[in-house]
Image 1 (tube, rainbow, N blue to C red):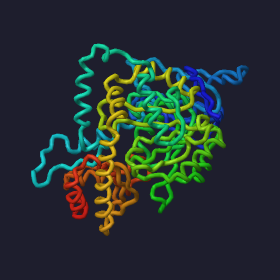
Image 2: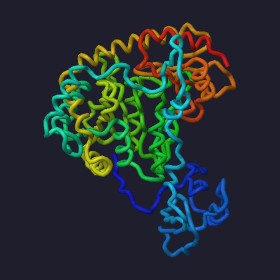
Image 3: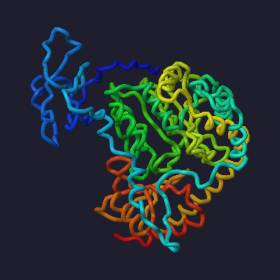
Image 4: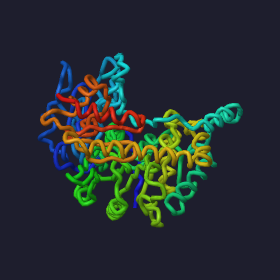
Length: 481
């Protein structure tokens, strides 16, 4: 059963680690969290430093669970295995949260800078395969509806914290119909996009020092958020030949005393892989048996073949003990700038999520909720038409890659194709940057989705017009380093 853990301010608590891991920067230095507490190591572990005056020792340790033990004094301490307190030294100016400062910026901004300020010829325009955005605007009837709603003075105030009651009812009914299982409005909450739904779910489950199993390659915002909170993402790599689908057996070997959840995204970002129903069931049963959560992000569920139920997890009357489900309205209704998503969980977990939601955004954006409500009521046929068109585009890309003797398709689905590049000994960042420079193709290198992904490149084809698929394939085939 899921256990909600309170956040204890000014303390870090975790079980011992088997080896040093989770780099934590402290001001301008970096310390590693060590296994247990060994007095012989305290005060003798240097911090890496790029500038003078950086703390070079960890020499304050408050053994809160052994009050009789003498306390060491000094400017800082970072450790695990027991509750500890740390304090910052005197400084001339505020410094950033060290967990936040240790996280690299979003890859989307980095790749955008590769083409910033450039102009492109008409015969070889830039083709953007980087960001996952729909290749079409919201339906015209939706835009007209929202124009009318904006004239209503009552449509501009706060909504309830977890969203408009009528939207929660409509979304619960949508889920119940899609999964053919009863889900109530009290078990869903509307959020400011699916990213926020993930952040709220993780915040409600885990605290600094905990671990969450995250398949690799991972959606980078998931990894970034956990590191910002001091939560350790534990990578779960897919096996060769698996089509980028992770193994529940491999995940079982990663579960330890600090594990709080397993995260799955299907259809996957970045790989596009669609996880089989049997695989999802196996992950669910594993999580339930070990008393941890299964966070299931199905942002792209609407791009599966029509009428296909992706899993039967909601058939289980006890799903609320294990499953936290995430969703986005952004892709299905082309509402990426509206920031509207959803989270589904048992009512006890929703109570905790509501507390966090109140603090971070008061309520989801009203206009996004109005758009989602209209979409659920009127636009599902329109959305299914877009799904069929996107499926045809994916088929064309897949067929073209199958003819290539250089680029190998690992997996494809929904918005994405994950491909292995043909350049031995060259990093994916080098390959993607050269594709932008020489072929005017903007892609995301695999390394930005986790370590060990230097042989792969993600192609986000959803926003690429059908007549651009052939030029994409041609440019890839002609590209050399």
